[in-house]
Image (cartoon, rainbow, N blue to C red; front, top):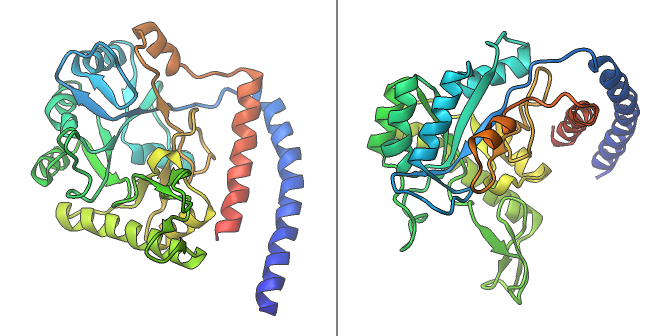
Length: 317
């Protein structure tokens, strides 16, 4: 216990020193960055792509016509769609990227990704990453849209365009955190109330549950697709130090979030920012979404969060 207490104090001391350095470095970096426009890469989030005409577009459903129009816009306006792995390499090591680089991702693993989006991506030779809910049984519901099959995923993986990664195994859901069932929170950050035990999960039970789920997600995809899985997208964008630590323990190295913004060299690969489109956007609005913002506020925000993310990683080690 004494060793743990000393280690905890040392962490806080180091964190305090780092925080002081961060504040100074962040301001200096922003001031210097006002004349230095580092390349910023947007990562788009899609979910289900529907072949049907949709009048009310939501963040989880995009019509095939809208998706095709957006991909055509990217193609005609010089955007270079790159694999997520290339962005990660750029963020870590400064790998050179083409101008107007952009990344496409899909969350959950709907069949529309294969039947509607995949042919459009092939037409323009655009790579994409699909973050898959690895439990192919329990996620289905009476009103749920059809999900991808392993055969469809193998075909897409075989093309070299599509990279299947993880979106947890069975934790893409909210959980009740109280006996009265009034508080719902994402399963990746909240300790669930266990009615059979008459209490909430302990910290240890919560951590074990996360680890087992993350490990099962990775090994299930690897076994079915014969590939390496090392990247995960957080359901609802929800994570904390415990979930990040357990995901690392389960073999994940890189994490996609729903934090809005773009990514550049030296940003943390533990916090890959992505852009989720609003409902019923026009093509002009889409163009604005993917245009880098070099305003003073964005410079400050970008650099400050970069160092805060580094500070978070210190506590997770």
